[in-house]
Length: 119
Image (cartoon, rainbow, N blue to C red):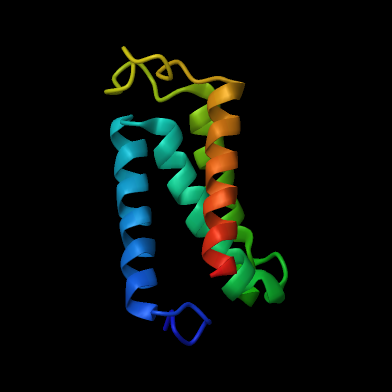
């Protein structure tokens, strides 16, 4: 499927995309490397918006980007507000969240998506 979307080699991109979603979700769930986890999810969702659902409008019922935008916003919000008091990151410098962490997540996710789309 990834090869049909223009990603070559398709299997490599499928593994990278799957690992990014899995590890990004796991990172947000456990509060581990939160800005990087948010960046991984943002990057994958930006790719999905551009390659799959962007031409279908906003609403998910029509195949649009609504779901992808929601995941991006939630990942960005978690990076901004911090992972929480039970997070594994809480003792690390980025464990409290903030605009800097949100900017890192958005920037890395955007750059990662742009690189993947340009190859």
